[in-house]
Image (tube, rainbow, N blue to C red; front, side, top):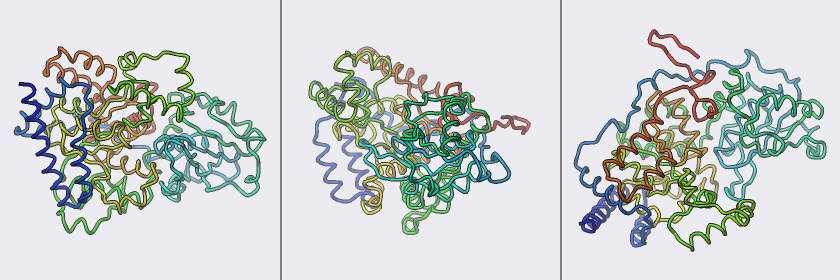
Length: 538
């Protein structure tokens, strides 16, 4: 019986995929060559880890395909979310611009990808204000993983950023000529992440960095990854983080235009309609050609899924994903090249992949993400935008997800090769398009709560979403426990436990202690809560 259901589901999946592909082609979403590639991919063997659950999910989705859509799945379940309003834009540190005479200049060379660098920029703004210094526009370090040469002005609008923050922090585009020739490392002004505590308190910067700044007139932070904490930062400086992240950092017009085109095609409407759109696109909501083919009206709903299952994430997790000895060998080779310190540690320490999984340290596979969505009740018709880089394992690894949800697309499906060409070899600019599509989605589904993109997008949706931007966060540790019972659990029990797990994250509350302001902006200095009498606290 199970085999019959499986064969039926595969046939149904193929039929839905052909229907969707044909519709996509008619909308000029993809060309004939992509269609041929997809046919080849269908013939590749699937990589399945949870066959019994996948079969039950496929059966349930097929059975429920003709039922009316549950609109509650697309709504924020707690009305308290709408009582929180953005308020960081209302206040700057002073009525006038800071004096040019101060303690010196702060340089930052930020590491990581787009989202790590965004956090570093806003943390640098706070540190510059704390130390009464001038901030030089941050630079981005080249990474062998990200392989992107983009700098601040390639991604964000420099002048807008400087002007927006001008009453908070003095920002310049480069060091004065008199300081450019200094050997900052030789004079002790270069500060690495090894010399500052992770999530350090402001007092550490005042004690350790300020004397160097006052003596040499310049300090260079090299790396600056998560070097400033959250709980000990005063409200007026916490507000700076929010002013920077939610207001001052605007993508360059080229990214805004491509992002607006991406979202318009996902929604199948020509007009932007939300507060989120205004924040993301400003005056660059352009595509006259698109409006000729699609009338403005009620937009289609879409769910954005951030699939954090790239090779670097998989290798670093030390987990196993059903690929046997060949998978172990390839991942170890990747660690030797990209994570040599981790590879060295593994030679002297035994790490249990099973224990890693039970502790919730393994990234979710596309299959596991699809099981969460099906347990929550999203039907086969759900239009899903997948964000992220190259999925580890390629089409065979993605296939169980597309079996459940055939209407699945990426930015490469929605935008033409010519439209993506300016960003093709720049991972940070491509990540910016994913940021835009995820922030604009009706529902945002996360597979890794530790991901910077997921964290920043979630916070952006809370801040600008007006209480109408639900985010799905599975607890990986609890989910691993549920999956470990696959051999005996019934589909109804699986659904109930997954729904309880996801619902707990949706509860509305102020930022818990220790949590990032970028992810949880419901905090003093950032967001305000309106009372029933119209009063506002925080």
